[in-house]
Length: 102
Image (cartoon, rainbow, N blue to C red; front, side, top):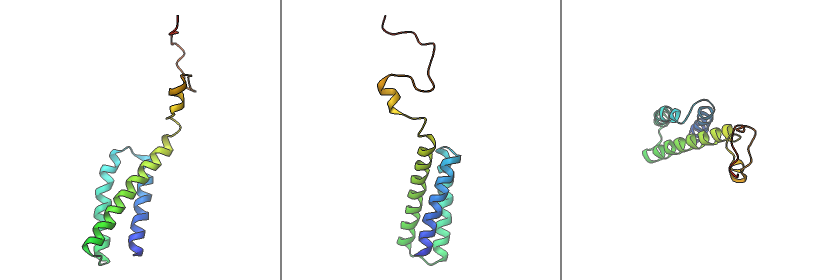
């Protein structure tokens, strides 16, 4: 059971690292490697079929959630609904906009 926990934590770390370095297409490349590596390690440690499939699926889900969390934290400052709602320009404003109310 310890090896399953190690694989899940390693998948989360890979997801975080991928989220900080690559775009969403990085998951397309990383996910098969995680699945294959986890399947090999679980086969070496004599996990059963259903337990192995469950651990591989959890590894993939954890990797993707960690990717989205890391990319959200990286780009959270750029996305703000507050600037869209109140209509006032943010820090990066357009100076050459004509007045709409004449």
